[in-house]
Image (cartoon, rainbow, N blue to C red; front, side, top):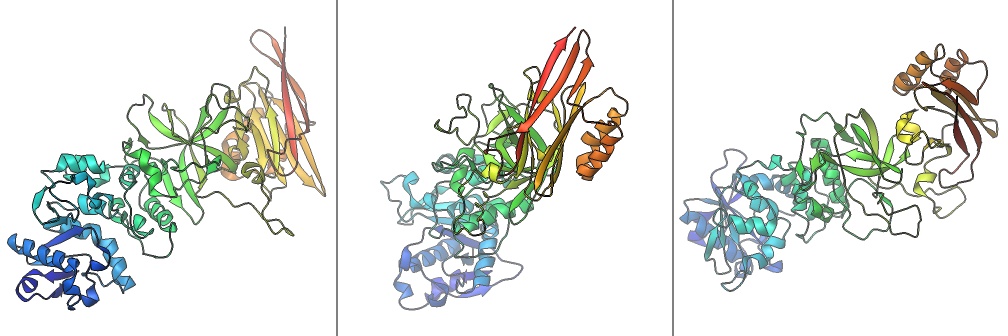
Length: 552
């Protein structure tokens, strides 16, 4: 750490540095707004031209204040960092929160604060770097443009908290920064600006308690990297609780925010679990998030459904237990973020899209599943021979084959069980196959009495579909059910395995079964046909229509 020797500057008028690698002495630190070309750089700090700059006066005044407080060393960001060295700049930015935290006192110089102006109007509060410089120091003294004392952080606590929306307990360090969920911390930066786009991410490193290399020139990508590093360091799903701040016309988006401004609605968010003790897990690769979390399904009044991701955070004013993010399945246990399905928002494309929102729900005992969340939407594929990507539905283009299920009114979809779950889409009520899958299967437990199993595969140049019904009380079906619903996904059962298990139970396929209920007989039957709706997939598709008839 390079520090200015305050006594030397005060006595000789020249800036002299001392470097420390351990046993760092007491030092004062300056927080201020830069004044363009008037700042003093490390390489020219003692030139005659530099001594005429207003930035030199700030350094000199800071050294005077430090000596009056019995402090012999000072750190100022303009001249204590050799910015021509990318290694030194990276180290300084990654260490800056800690340097402000360890300072004996932080002097804040408000260059535009005059006697008649309001504290709230000072440019210092609109600066991204101010956040960590306000939170980290234990002791802080604020001065106006004439270097007249305004007050301390303690004496101005209420106003500082009101201006920045940062809780007083955090500013006063009565509560640790780690007690605040990541989304709320990022919400403090929704509004302040930095000169460089990348600095809007780099100024948040200390607040998020992470480190990462500086790559000036990467632009908005820096904020993506910030989110990726947060995911690698902690399990805090509030990072995903942002809402798009622009008027985005798309129906879907990725799970990582494009800008810190997307967190503006998270200013009152709080954690409901301890990230270290939460049963969930989260990791990241170069294209997706992988989570082990409970999977929830949102049910709307018009019998529509949408998958939802449980978050370990909440907002005041809700009676429910936690928040969820609506999402859309586009591949095997693979999701993108989706808008909510508003009660008044039907299927018509002409109607206004429902907002991207967080849906509050009550607690339920749901099993943990490993799911994949895409950080960005996949790009449209470019087919061979074409120069431009085809414009197509992002959901249908991600599937190659589907088997759509139409249930009888007596059996609501929410009462059925399906397997394999990763190839089942509750929103469209269908099984799907991917582009590289040519042997597929699916099974549905229609109720406690009937089980439907289907297969679709490619033989030569043709696609074939087969389906059959079984009574669950028939001999051997109970064990078959266990294989399908308990072991198939865990051990990766493929179509040949399921076919062999079925052969031991049924000599021929059955399109109907007759079942005795408590007071009457019930006949389940199905009819399968080729489907025409291209909105579901880009290849072969079938529709299976079930019928339920009762008789005494």
